[in-house]
Image (tube, rainbow, N blue to C red; front, side, top):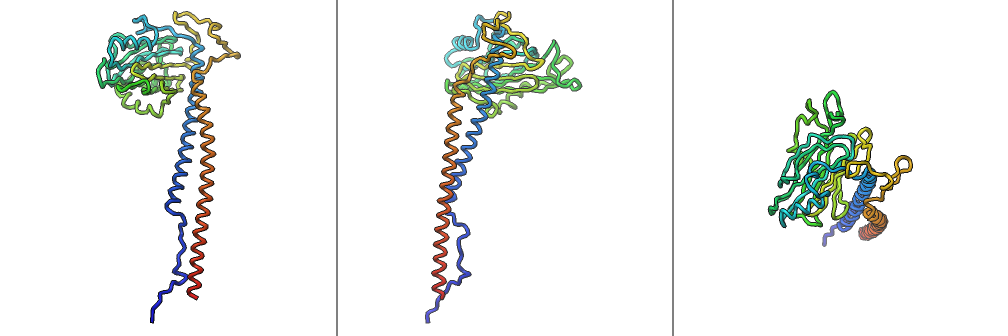
Length: 362
């Protein structure tokens, strides 16, 4: 007699997980697509907010007019960072890599106790003298690679904020003041399409009896703070990177151009008691407000946006984000019904198999 092995009902198992490996992979891809879309649009919103803040900052700067040039500017007949860079580059040679730092003090404070630390490269012999920068004045610093191959320029500079001839104190009992620092890095592989690096910092520092930095760490600022540049700054376009800080009575913006002849502009705007009350022209006098189309008080007329082209780009980005969101929703809904129908078919097939087993047992 032939022996038969029977499958009893309690031995038949229905799959607890009707999703196949392909289904799981599809769901993961959809989830990654949705997350990527959210992150991209979130970053776009952040950049848009930064651009708006930059436009407001530039509007206030433009109202104050051109500052009187002092310090290293007085040692040359050239009057801009760009022209000075071109002149230095021509004197150095074809392998030149450098940065011209233009410090513009749009506040009523004095930038004193200047300190510098070069982490790579060299400083200009004629255009790197450290000076105090009075209110409503601008100065210049130049650093470069001395025309050496495979050599970049990077480092940090900082100034202590002083007001009325004394240090600006945040805490009278603890003798804590405000220091403004900037770091930079211009790659030796520089090109017009390579964005250089910049960070800016508002530091609380302990002061000595002279109102200077009591425990200076200038030699460590670059190594400790510059690596934050990807998160702290953003590209305006392919030719300029911008970063900003606000607080402790100041709005500070630093921007650096691309290429081997970089220009870093450090703009310091005072708020409240540190606001620059008077507008100065390049000859030290006062600008005519009407000649600049500026009306103070209630009828303030703001200059045109300096980042209008990028703002238009951001509008396009938001439109793309909207369409991407609709597409993601459509794909997720479509995928849900596909998986649901597949699951129902699989359960129906398993139920049919169960019925055939039951018939066989009978």
